[in-house]
Length: 400
Image (cartoon, rainbow, N blue to C red):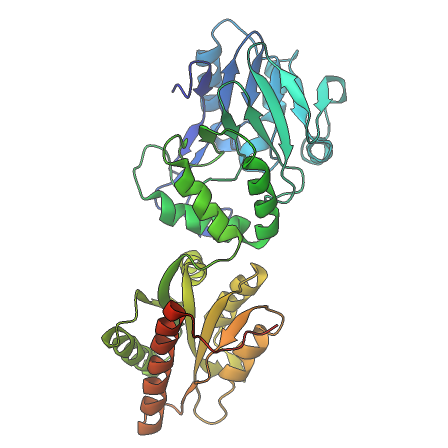
């Protein structure tokens, strides 16, 4: 596949993977992207996952013909991109590896060698001439590993963005970019918003016409859309007006309360009310939705003087990714000693810029006249807050 006249795609599609990184469901597979820049000198941009060694090397050979590569650019050392470095170097023994010092240290950990006799260590601001193409290297530490460098081709205005701007899904399947890129970003990179913001500031100074990520499609149209979403996600800004209700229910009584709340929110005109059963849904999708929408309702049972395990897991996913700038409402259920509200609130103790609603809902085993009234109050509060945000009169105080 041609990216530009001189840049070719040599990556692979993986439809055998069931869980990416051992936890993310990828119903449409994954792509592991690799590129070749053909110039007076040839640069190969990253390798692919170990399961696709022969396919990748065949793709590479078909693109190179009788020529051999001069450089292997290693931007990121995660094994889905670096696994074939040693295989490549055995085959192309005169090639120089170009990478950061931290990446070479990781190579020794992975392969037992850092290829000391064939390495070129690069850092922020360094350039490499291939002839008519000049590669400029930009440090991107903790996006999302510490060794990451991204590469800008100054001639064709192409940014090789490592894991940035990636998404789940193989390239031979058409699907919405936003949803799967959001799930990918929040799950894998979401903790490192400040570092992504730093990289976006650097990228703002470049004339980028094409983005070549290590996962997902090459982006060459409407780049402002993708850059805007990355700015939203990495600044923890609300992407869409809406309410996510995430719940667990043992015998169905908490579920009935959630369904009643959702109906009342919709009847009051609240936008995008999404309900997710944490015991049955895709956890990564639930986490992505929590970051997507401005309001989150958490409803769960007291369980062993704690909270139901799926809810605990969900909140931990949120807090470890820096969840903030959102409104949170709590719904608890318990038969003799309800503790869920106290436990959930405590789990957000170190979180910043969260607003908790004045109203909480307490069920004692099942819905009652009192708890139905609390649900009415909570629905009013959440919808009034939405209207207040529209005219700038919201009066809740965030946790500092």
